[in-house]
Length: 183
Image (tube, rainbow, N blue to C red; front, top):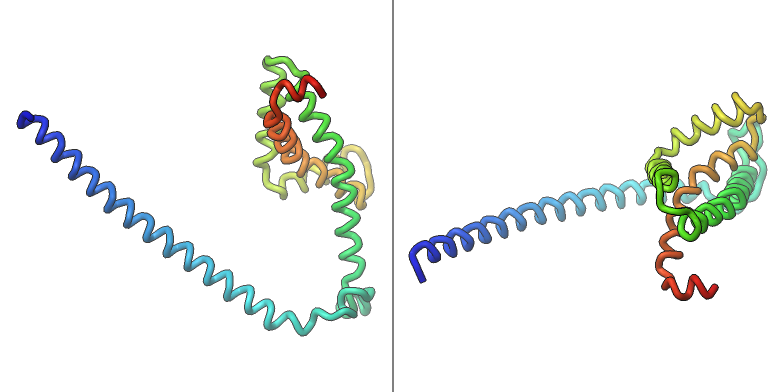
């Protein structure tokens, strides 16, 4: 072994030691930050549970609000949330699955398919507040729908549709080509 090879090996060993040290320091700070965040979360949850649990009763969950919604229960809120979720899924699931099947099985490679794929990717990363403002502007202002459960469901449907499209595409691509052709 030449002197030059020994020098290279020594340099590599020193580099590995420094790299391992930096990695250990970084992991220490990452673990410390994780523990700190989890502790803060636990403190907040404990505070909410301790102070809020006496207020959550069967009457609170099953009664109508009273006195201009300052007293009573939250039953209409629970029912409205369930209706919103169901209507949003009824809108988004069929359209998302149809779009994913088309993009995966029928659309030919080209600029249009690429543009649609990029649009789906961008919509998946769009903040929900932007979807809410878009839905209000499109459905209420331009189309003229009243502010209603249908308007909110359409907006929520568009919010969850990119996730449904991507999930369906991944599921379709996980199936071997022979099985897809047979079906």
